[in-house]
Length: 99
Image (cartoon, rainbow, N blue to C red; front, side):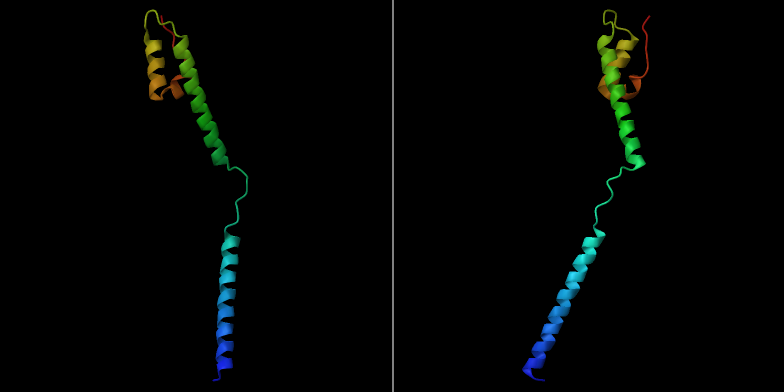
């Protein structure tokens, strides 16, 4: 084989490798398309659940502040414990009356 034939073979091999790498890049780019910007129902439910818990905690804190602290009773204790332990997410929705 002459040197020119060897150079032509090398060029074609190099071009083939370059084309293959371009095809691989285009395949990678086409598979990494961004997802739709629509929210899934599960994420909406999770957000609503989290907001419900936060609102319950805030209600518990407000009820703890508004309690009559003169004779410390069960409502003051329950609201205070709920506020500092995270149980206020649930306790905030419960009305506890002292006698």
